[in-house]
Length: 188
Image (cartoon, rainbow, N blue to C red; front, side, top):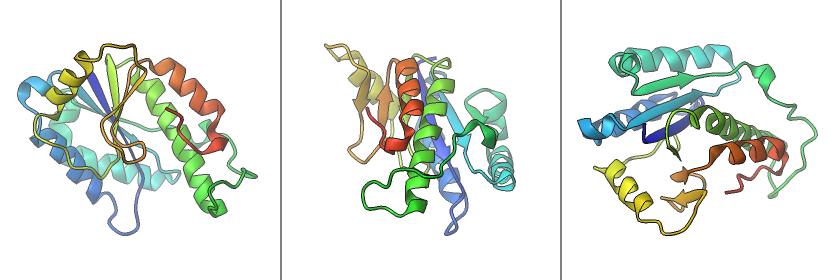
């Protein structure tokens, strides 16, 4: 497998999981059959609330059952006890305590996805659950990666936060992130 596309998701009050369904649909529509055979979409239902995790899974199964069966889509979850305590975190970036906890959890979520995703494919691409893809984006990524002349650990396909970060040597990234989640920044 060439590329795993990692998508962490949590329920949003404004529109539930509709943005996730749209993003997955967009990936499916904008990849050719040949590209589909080279990618895997890894979705992390990351809500602490078990009912919301189950809702995300049910929705994905309802919309994408054939793609789950053929391996294009993989859904993962973890038990809440896998996470460290998010109490007494250092306040950064003038954020509220709630925002600091959310960002710290997000860093752990990314690390868990990297750890799982590293064994699925040669490369890993992190995107958010509300993006729109370009047609032939997989081939564009392959061309870009293959034309790199220097050793790399990460490549950037977007300048928006952690959206569109391509990763190569994942074992190093995930361990660092999990140990340093309190910094609330994904260092790549």
